[in-house]
Length: 69
Image (tube, rainbow, N blue to C red):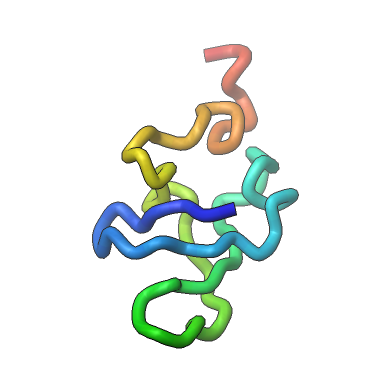
């Protein structure tokens, strides 16, 4: 799955989708797709990622208390 970094606009290839959809984890590992070669795996805060369309990540992926708020 690819997401986009809000600050740089670069696509990020998400390595572990389980951690992405887990609201108890605030970070996810991925590889920046900038340049001609795939970069090393880096940890990204979910808060700095959006879908390639610019749409925010679902709240249930970010907040473990999304049903009570």
